[in-house]
Length: 311
Length: 311
Image (cartoon, rainbow over all chains, first blue to last red):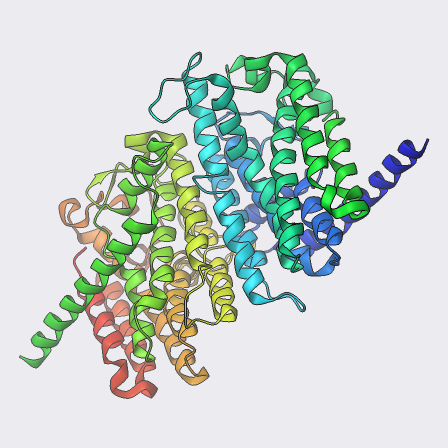
C-alpha cells in the first residue's frame, strides 16, 4: 500500500513539474504565427507532441533534491527538452532512421518537409543554448557557464551525436564490430553507443540541476553516479520496449531496431537478460543515492518508475 | 601609396590572426583519428577547407579595437567559425541548396554521406557552445554568458536559421512575395532575408569581441551599428559575386542563385545597383566607427577589403 501511495505521489509530482515545464516552453518558444510561421509551427509541432519531459524532470528533481527550487532551473529544464526534441527530429530524417511516426504522430519531416525539419532542429538547438545562458536570480554566472559546457559536451562527439553516428555505423555493419577503435565485443560496443547516445545527456541533466543549486561536491558526485546508471538503464528499457512493445503504446513504429539490425541490448543479450540488466542498473542508480539519505527518495522513485514504464 | 601600404598591413594582420585561429581550431577540434573517426574527419574536412575566417577576424578585431587582446577571445572566435561551418554543411544538403562544391571541394555530404553531414553539422554546433562557455582569465562570467545568448539569438529563428528558411521559401515562390508576414515589396523581403541569414551573426561577432572586453556602452553601440551595416554589405557582395564570379575563384558553383531563382540583391536591383548598395552600406559601416577616432581604422580597413574581395 505504502509503495502504491508513493507511486501515486510520484506521478502527481511528475505531472505537476511537467505542466510547469510545458507552460515555460510555451512562453519561450516563438509564437506559432511569428514570421516565418512554418518554422515556428514545425518547432512547436515536435516540442508539443506529448513527450514525457523526462530530462526536464531530472533537472528539476536533482535541484529539489539538493535543496533548490524549481523556478531558477526552469530555463535549463526547458533547454534540455528542446535539445531532446531537436535530436529526435534529426534522427528521424530519411538519411538517418527514416522514421514515419514519432510520439504517435507523423515525424516532423513528413509534415513540414525535410529542409524545414533540419532547420527546425537547428533552431531548437540554438534556442536551447539561449535558454541555458539566461541569467537567473540566485544562480551564479559561473554555474550558468559551467552548465552550458556540461550540456554542450554531453551532446557533442563524445556524447549524443557521437552515439548517433555509432548507432548508424553499427546498423550498416551487422555482426561483429571490426572498425578501428570499436570495442571488440558487441556487449562493450552497445554499452558505448548507449552511454553516448542517451546516458550522457541524462547524466548532464541531473548534474545541471545540482550545479545550478551549488550542491556540495559529495552530493554532486552521488547524483553524477545516479545519472550515469539511470541514463544507461533508460536506453536499455527503450530497446526492450522497441522489441516487445506495440506501436500504439510507444507512439512510434515498434521493432524498427530489429528490422534495421541495430546493435541493441536485446540483439546482444535477448529480451529477458536485457530486462535484468536494466533492473540491475536501476538498482545501482538507487544505491548511488545512499549518501543523500531520505532526500534521495524522489530520484530513487523516479528511477523505479522509469524501469516499469510501458512507453 | 599610403592606401596600398595600409591594405598590405591589413592583409598581414588578417593572415596572422587567421593563423592563430586555425591553430586553436586544430587544438580544440577532436583529433581526426579519435573514435568515431568518420565524424571527426567530416568535421575537420569542412572546418579546414580554406575559409577566410571572416567571423573570427571580426571578433578579434573588435576586441583589439576596444583595447582587448587576442587570447581571451580566441575560444569565441573559433566558436563562430564552427557555427559558420555547421551552417554551410546543412545549407549544402540535398534537401536544401543541394550544392556540389564548397570552398573548391566537394560538399561535406558528397564525401561522407548525408547522415554524417547532418551529424557533423550538429556536432560543430554543440562544440561551438562548449567553446563559447569556456572560462577565460580576465573575462567576467557574466560577459561569457551574455555572449552565449547573443550568438544563440543571432543563429536562431530571428537570425541565421530563420533567414535560411526565408531563403528557401523565396526560392519556391519566385516573383512577388505574398506569404502572410512577408514584406510586400521584394526589396524589403531580400533585406530581411539577408539581415537574418548573414548579418545577424556578423553583427554578433563584432558585439561579442566588444562585450568580452567590457567595452563602454558608447563603443559597443558604435560597433553594433558597424556590424549591422557590414553584415548586410557582406551578403550583398556575396550575391554579386555569385552572379558575376567564376566557380574557380569562388570555390563554389557560380550563378546558382539565378538558376534556383533565389531572391537576391542582383535579382531585385541588378548587378550595378547592387554594387552601389554594397558600397553605400560599407560607407555607413565605416561612418559608424567615427566615435572611435583612429582606433576605428582597423575595422574600417577590413570593411573596405571585404567590399573589394573577389571570392
